[in-house]
Image (cartoon, rainbow, N blue to C red):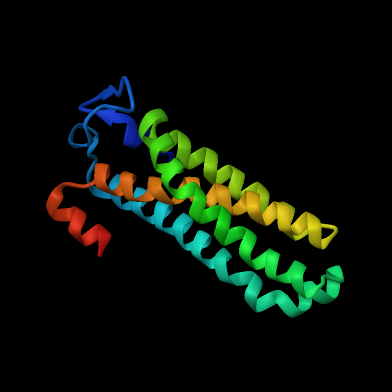
Amino acid sequence: MWSFDVLNQRHGQSMTSPQDTAADARIGGRAASLALLVVLFASFMDLLDVTIVTVAAPHIAADLHASPAQLQWMLAAYTLALGSGLITGGRIGDDYGRRRVFLTALAAFALASAACALAPSAGALIVVRAVQGLAGGFMVPQVFGIIRSSFEPAAMAKAFG
């Protein structure tokens, strides 16, 4: 299985620290395209989870016997946590490496998604949605950094487009 190891290559040598320049970490061709697909899919899943509870709200409220206030918190907990994690997540990615933070946040996001599906009560779902949003807030800033460091300037415009 392909991994983000290609993001940690620099002219055949491994990177020594996350503070290495982005230009030195650029990859090209198929590896960059695959990295782009992976990070964009993760970003898509994050954005999908912002709205997915809105669509399923009537069924969730009925299944978990949630009050209108609890239903509002199910919707708001995710976006509040997501928004509050973006700046911190970007900084942590700069300090500890985008790949490491992205993969950790992706794993936390996936686990929180499974926990959301298994939540036994409205209160539990609210808490897990907040955890899921925070994981998304740490994951999303890495997407932009990975794209920036993976592509040459000419190809970067296409990747962002």
